[in-house]
Image (cartoon, rainbow, N blue to C red):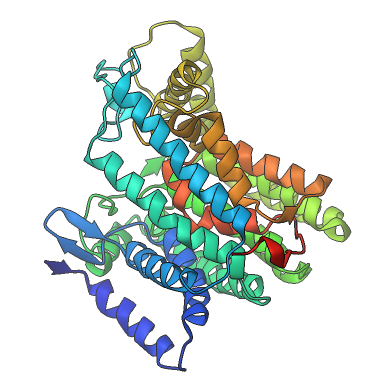
Amino acid sequence: MAFSPFFVLFFTYLVFQLNKKKWLINELFFFLIPIELTFELFINVGYLIKIGNLEISASDFLFSLLVFLAVYKLLTTRVNRNLIILAILFIYIIIIGLILLACKPVDSGIISYSHNWDFDYYKSLFEPASIKLVQIRMIFMIIAYTPILIFVQNSYPPNFKKEIADTLYSSLNVIYLILMIEFILKNILKSNLFSEIILNIFGKSNSTIYSLLQRGGTYGLQGLAREPSQMAKSLFLATGIFLLLCNNNIQKARKIAIFSIISLIFVRSLIGFASIIIIILMYYIIFKVDRKIIILILLSILIFIIYKNIKSFNYYFDRISVLLKFLSVPQNKWIYFTNQPRIISIIETFRLFMKRPIFGIGYGITYAHSFIATGLVSLGIAGMTVWFKMQLFNRVLQFHHLIILTLIIIFWFINGYIGELYSISSLILILSIGKVHIRSERYKI
């Protein structure tokens, strides 16, 4: 068993926070949710504890603690009957998909979670669809996530969303500072010191940064994520949640939007540029009184940064042109950028989904570089419909809420993986959309 240096910092922080007062179980649960959200979004490198080849992150530890607290409280709490029915139905759909897989497997080879689309597709390393250890872990995660979802949807306190917004505001400011330090070290000092610091704090693991990552003549920012695209995803989710929960605090929202957009530009990921567009659209929808100001500010920043970095932007133009060329020529067997395997993973996964559109081909059997495609092939239309109903439970959506939800689904179409099904960030993001419908006591058990 091994512990990273971060282990000491993590538990010192927890003990300090928990010793401030005597906690009721539900208070402790909702106190830990914002902390778990921050760790899930922004610390994706290294490990907290390593047991053999098993690496347990701080997020994994907090997730397990939240599951225990949620189950304990649900045993003594009145719960909305319809929410329980949806959760049971969701688990039944997963079981049905796996039974169908065992009785009659799909007749196409798949790229499993133990393989990599980026290379194995071109080597034709397809294999029959089957249940492996990695799928058992994912099944455990989605079942464990269910009590968290039920308890949050059923019992969150009135100040819960404000606490989420305040925590994310502080976390984002810390991340901006980390990214600024990383930018100076990588692009001005041309040093790999940032990666070395990460290794020394969070430990060496498969998810740890080992070297600089150069793109288009400059180095993409990764923060405490595995890669730039992971950093882009985290910045988008955190920014989106904050904009939805900041209670129309225009000053803070404007600051977060601007700094996130600047950070996403220097992350140097196509996912990051897609995130910029969606963030601008979300801001435009949410903050009507600030539309002209934010558009002028954002355009000014974009023009300035593009002017200062025009040479590196050829890198992205090359990626787009090569991708279009790749899609127009049949039977390509080469990789120039990661766009090709990612778009192919989405196309091929949708083809598998069309073979069993109702219940999918089996939960966690294969994946794409797309949460929507992976969710559909794993759960089918039935499973994804129930999942969205659980996430949006007891919420009333107006037209502008539907637009925001559509933008989020577009982001999930081009990014994400099956872990979004049981992530706290997905739960909080969708929980932030719309208005709460008044609950009726007669539907509680």
